[in-house]
Image (cartoon, rainbow, N blue to C red; front, side, top):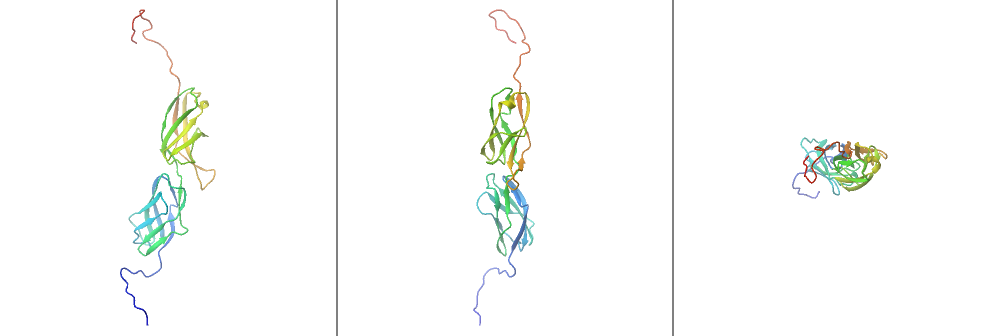
Length: 219
């Protein structure tokens, strides 16, 4: 004889849900990236959770038992490195196990430089670089040469332009590079932003060039 049981609510019979992959596996800081989780029995999922802070996800339409579309949201200051996740599927909670999403620095974006014009012959000048996807390892480069760089926050760096680079009038190309932790020696480099070195003003003529003593002359 068996022991009688009373079950309430839906009962799932069959193999447990599983996660077998995620595409893309690398997601940048300060981004919202569409992704797809591959696996089995993922239909009816109501949530995807990442441990810690800075990374979250929402489920998108179009899921099937073997593919779950999601949008991964990563904060600008989210910690770099791998993140596991858990899928709340209709057939049960499903940890990702060895399947991870890697949070990478991504390509920085320069949105402005202050000042953007520096006088020719100026001394060492510190500029403020505004933008996105900066981190503590970001370095500003002037025409490809690393500058003394200070990280203020995900949206701001300061960099010291040496006087030697300001000796001649013209334009200088400033970029920001983030190291790629997965590939030592490689960098994510922003598009260049131009910095102007302006020649000093020059007087070519004065009009009128004479006036009565003691008079006020308008030119």
